[in-house]
Length: 318
Ligand code: NAP
Image (cartoon, rainbow, N blue to C red; front, side):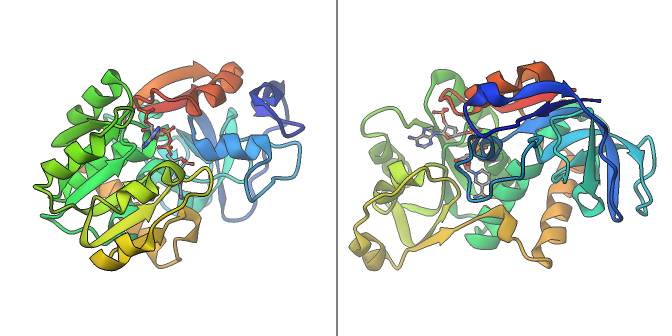
């Protein structure tokens, strides 16, 4: 089969399309014929060797994908079934991937393989950050700080469907349009000086009950000045250290909550999966695909995922 392989850590160019043997699923795994693979920033950190987990080499990247069940002994997952997947032991940037059965979910009618590949990490992360960690409730206000990318768009749709007042940020006019289209009541340009003052005015100066933060090393200190009393900031993404004034948190009884999807407990996981699946089935959750590339252009997909100007999910077609 064709698969993207990296044999050393490094720049995107280490990703090569190769002909390798298809994976042999272990007990409890399903073999999926991948038609589209979701590209996440974590794939790029792993390829670069900068992630806390360095996979043994050679490796094929990718956790997210969508396709058709090729071989399965798992109850409810029959051959020929259209599925989306949120984990793989062999990597989803390939024509075939071995996936743990509990990470394989039916792909509802009306959703394309590319949309299915955009579900996994983004929606599960957004759901856990919003509802499990930050305990967002209907009627509250939420700022999705970095709303034009995979996790941010998922968060907008989830928050809007749950009855929150939603604001989102993006760094380009195209991103801002998308943020408004996908559920935000208001959109702010994070490349513009003073945009958080405008966002605070939008809350009538009471601040945001919840902030989902995609770039904490840039924004955390400022987030603390626009979070409401008893507010919660969920740190989803950060690319370095940051200095904060703890008094800002103290005077508001505000909480800063770390959030990593892989820390989801065995109890949380099926609940999060079920909530996301229900939203995909009833149409409240509609993944947005911004860029489709062939597997052979995996290197370009990694350059694109680290560039600003996000407007939906990047997927590779297999
Ligand atoms: P993505 O699709 O590349 O989107 C990145 C987002 O960050 C875009 O909306 C981008 O907006 C925005 N951004 C850029 N500069 C910003 C700034 N100064 N302030 C606020 N936002 C800014 O990435 P993603 O998949 O959504 O992931 C977002 C982050 O969460 C990444 O760092 C990723 O590693 C992390 N993540 C963590 C977990 C976890 O378990 N903790 C899971 C998934 C992802 P523009 O491009 O419009 O400027």
